[in-house]
Length: 152
Image 1 (cartoon, rainbow, N blue to C red):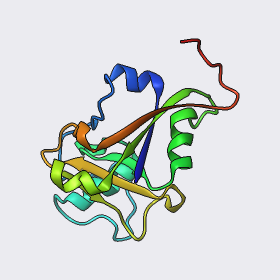
Image 2: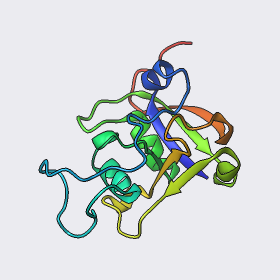
Image 3: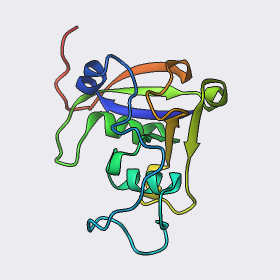
């Protein structure tokens, strides 16, 4: 099982869909001061470059990958917190990897990820667009322990 955590407002704005920020399956690294010069990026356009760029920033250079994690708690953290200490209501999508090939979803992970503790698996649709809903087996609303819980 893979998990994707997003803030509830992002989930609602997207209508419950999982959409990448970009649409490019392959990207070329740019010398913009954000890449590592340690051999993780390669010369020219490649899918691995798109994944590596995505690990730096979602949609970097137009890449079509979406972050998921093998760790539910990591996804819950991303759904309910941000880098500034803000706390949110969130949603965790549960994605069944056994359904990926049937729905045209490609998963990529590396032995040397940028943030190993996140247990990230980057996924994309075959065509670089929206992740097919058929791979989502559960959508769970989650709350940060100290976040205000809205009455619904």
